[in-house]
Length: 244
Image 1: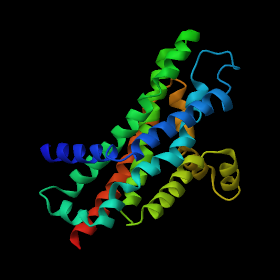
Image 2: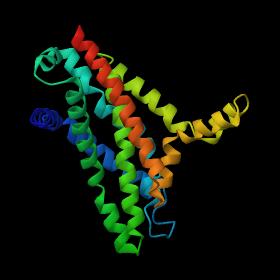
Image 3: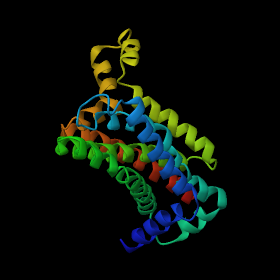
Image 4: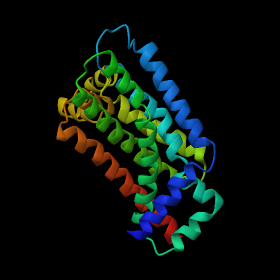
């Protein structure tokens, strides 16, 4: 546990050793604010809720979260420090989980800094804060799922750009799998059971259910299962690197 804490602190601190972390947070908050107030019609809707705020989380995470995760292992492999890391008395699982949790904590800080929007909606009306809390919980677990995908592909390549592109492409498949266009294409040749499975894999559908205040265990377990799957593959890849 002490080893994991050391690795966590090392990885988490590395985000703030360069201006990249601050630029990312400012960019994330600015873009999300602009989408909420202008594209989402926050004021024009005349409703005291954060529906337009949460509506854009999925698409922002699709593009921005891989930017956080692409350096987790690619940078270690590029600089050669991964050899030093893997010679320490730490298992691949401990290293993978520690790095993932550090990245997730950084993402959580970025999400937490959106609290002025929550304050604003409470100032303007009387929203259902329980629904808002559920939305934030769903947003964090979804961010974790995107991060797990990104971390997995980061360990598969020394090139951060390649890791980023692969993470975005795979994340896109999970994101759009439940959209009408995809389901219409699949329903033309696949049985209804397969269509239902594909629809259930959608990040959008699972997050929308949570952001509406329905903390269904199925939706939460889905995101946790995606995290577990890609972190498991991540551990396998790191073990292969260690074996070399």
